[in-house]
Image 1 (cartoon, rainbow, N blue to C red):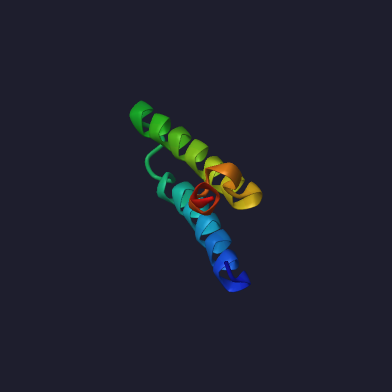
Image 2: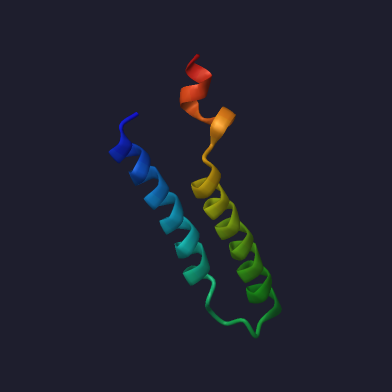
Length: 65
């Protein structure tokens, strides 16, 4: 995998993490909206962790052999 392709994956993962945070900044007065906001915080954390650590053994390239 080229360096540009690798950097593009990191940028995409960070973008998805930030998008999940921004999408949750709605009406937090409603209990259901607050629950969904914290769900999105968890997803954003997962995306940012994936961007930082990489997929490792779970990547498609690692399974090819």
